[in-house]
Structures are given as C-alpha cells and as structure tokens.
Image (cartoon, rainbow, N blue to C red; front, side, top):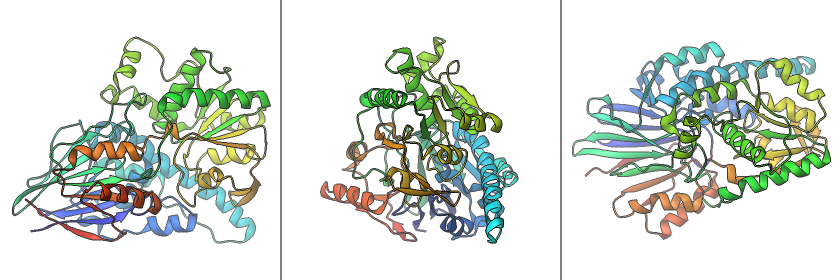
Length: 467
C-alpha cells in the first residue's frame, strides 16, 4: 500500500494550514487552520472540507496559532470524533484560544450585523460559536516532546520542539508501507535561534520527506540584537509627539515577547517608561499558561523565573480583560502602548483601537508580525491612504513602523541552515506556507543547492517512495 500526501491549505499562500497523509491503513490530517483574508473568501474557504471529517483517524496539530488550529471546531461539527494529537502546552493553549476564537466571531458578526441592518444587507452567521469550540476540546490529547505516540497499527508521531511559539512542534510521522517506515517531518512553522523565551528549533532524526515553510523564504530579518534599540527609538519619538503606540499582536508568543523586551527597556532606562496595556483577555490567559510549561523555556528564561525575576512584566504591565477598561483607553489621550489582538487586524479589540487612533498623526502603529494578503494588517503595513474598519473608511494618518526582528518565523538563511544537514539523505522537500513569490524564491534556492525539492499547488497529491 502506497503512502500519499495531499496539499490542501497554506499552499502558495500563508494561512489555513491543512494537509493529509494517507498510508499504512490510516488517514491523518496535519493541522486544521483558519484561512484568513477578505470576509467573503474567509467564509467560503473555511466552511467546507475537501474530505469527510468522520473518516479521519487522527489530527496532528503542530501548534496553537489560529491559522493552524482554528478550524478544528468546524472539523468536529462536521463529524470528526478521533484524537487531536499535539504537545501538552499546545493543548493547554487551545483550551483558551479556540473558545476565544468562537467568541470573537460571535461578537464581530453581532457588530457587523448592526451595520448590515442599517444598510439593508443580509444578516450573517458566525463560522462557529464558543460552544462549538468548547465541544471540540474533548478530543485533544497532549504529549511531551520526543515521545512516540501510536496513531493506528504501527503508524506513529513524535513531536520535536520547533522553537516557534510555546508548545510548537515539528511532528515526525512514521508511516508504514509494504517496505517499512517512511518518516515525514512537518517543519511548519519553524522558529529561530537565539530569540528570547523559547528553546532553539530541534531537527528530527532520519527524515525521508519534509513539509517546509517559506513565509520568509526570500527575506532576511533584522538581527535580534537590534530589536531593543529600534523599539526604544520608536517609543522615544512617539512620546515626543504626545502619541500612542498601537501594536497589533498575536496573543500567543508575540505579545509575551514584546512585553519581555519592554520590561528590559524600562529596567535599563533606554526608553521613557509609559503605561503599557495588554488589551486582550486571551493574551492574559495565555500568559498564565506560560508559567505552567517551563519545558519550553530557553536557559535564560528558565533562570529568570527560577530566581524570582519578572521577565513578563506581571508587576509593571496592565493586563486588561474587562471591556469597559478597554473602551476607557479611547478617552485617555496620554502617551501609552496598547498591545492588542488579533495579529492580522481581522478581528477582536485591535479593530476598535485602530478605529480610534489611525487618523491621529501623533500616533504610531507598530507592525511586529507577518500580515497576510487581503487583511487589514497588510493594508496598513503597505501604508494605504485609506483603509476600511468594520466597513467604514478611515484615513491612515498615524505613522506606520515595521519591525521584522520580532518575527517568530525563520528567514531564508535560517531555513537553509536548518535543512543543510539533511542534504545527503532526504528524498523530498515540499515547499508550503508562503505567498507564491516567497515560496518560489526558497524553492529556487534549494534547487540550486541540489536538494530534491517540490513546489506543490493546492489540491496536489504526491505518492512517496519507500525504502
């Protein structure tokens, strides 16, 4: 019996990761992420699956980011009843992130429907609800790193630390055909070396085939050592203008990393200490999960906690859950930093902060993460003169600054360094999770270096050769 892989999501694009591995009597789904983009396309692409969820033997979840985990509630709604295998930290993060995703969708649709009602437009329904998300949590099965888990018969998965976000992994699947095991690594998303808080990425052993991300396949990041210097300068300039700094940020990892750097800047008196608000109930809950999983920390972070220091600014940063406190920030004109989700500015409280601050030239919108095509975050990053928020036009007058050094994704050189030891043994690398231009650049780099590399299209199915 042959082993096949099918590429279904985040192929020649970034969001909505989802792939199928069939072989050894198993049908295994890797990731089940939300596609993020224009509202109509979002609903169309996320509402239907190109397979029967009831026939899947397991879902392997690489990490908790919504573009990898966020369509799991729909998977369960449509008949999936098997295990969702992941790391213990990812399981704990999803216990907060998926219900929050359902709640945000309900609230955003409620707000949008008020506008639709005034304009006589059709009323919309959320993709799924908080209740749907909570229903899906019963299928999560969390495990430690580097422990083999049997999926079905002899087929197995082992999670290796990807160094991308808390609990992130590079799953290594071992699928048996008539000639023995085929070992498939899923390096999507891949982290970076020498960034705060997390361990460096680990390469699984004896890889035959690899899914490889290409988010920054043709780009290089600023060195991490420059991060504090650049951030301090942005704070100084904005405070001098009397403005606010609005930071759209993923609630998971990016928020905690920014807080880590701000804490150091203020301790070292490299920037004026202004109030910092993390306005995201989810970010508050996820920060609490960080304290439960020291197995994911690098040595510096582990020692900071062990010695009683406060690396995540619990005594300095104001964490906001209550919506009234969030709204009160709009009436406060003093300099401050507001960190709020969602990271691509497509939902959540960040939309309200942008609406209230985007037209003030004293303010700064600080972009600290990847913004996918057709998102509000991408339009702001591209400094379009006008953008729509909740369907209403706003003039982009605030200063826009972009910091790539915060990225939790490996850049071109870091990806090439990661795969370099595999050159003599790997049978195939499949380029996924990148906009087409970036994917193609990484594909060409690997091809020049004589790697057996493939550049699949959405829906492609490839038969893997065994030993």
